[in-house]
Length: 336
Image (cartoon, rainbow, N blue to C red; front, side, top):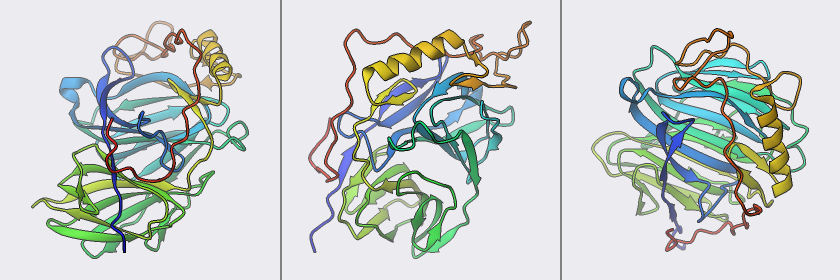
């Protein structure tokens, strides 16, 4: 049997949500690889002392053509969206928001949160449903599945006999994995999927390739089994994502996913014109947002910077192009 090839994707530091934004570590999208299945965006954050950083306080902002989720290890986040979805995201709970043709939402750490730690994920909707999928906020609290050497919680798809009822528009999988100290787990894979292991704690080793915290260990299609080891004396933790390769060229810019430059321009123009109050339009209105800046005389909530909505950045001078598809095969020596 040939050894499993593992490609390492490293993160970069990015501010999230405005001038006083907390810092996240982004691995996807990356010049090296933009997609793992339909998973198109991975931000790892924390452990973050919110008394020092202010935590997460993202005022109303738009999305198109995607689904978003936040998986927490510690802390609590308030979610409100223009589709009427509301919830408090807790560790071990999965909320998946579907934007479809357009939605706006907010994410704010609550007063009871002292340490914020987790991962934010986006899923690109396929062309067949990206404009027709209805706004939605799905919820699921996955049970613990015991493994030799560890545990897992499956929040999307199926893995090791466990499954999630949350609907996906393409075949995919997502799970939290915990591994006992100095132990190894073995996962049975769908060989039609490509996969990624996002390292969080412990010393995570994917098929003999050690990962640094926030790095992704990528494996391509054709793999039947995957060994994941924790070489530390503490519990190890990682997120496991994967899916059937999305063989579509997508264009991601800011919070929008489209297919070409002109479409992104239309999305931006519509959002800018609405100033966050597109009640009956493409992005709707987030009713009930109260950020860390309280409520102004106009009755609108504000983030710590006094913003009632997040304006889009300026467009680049050149026309944007979709990213070229990368073959779903691991390239172990590729590092950018």
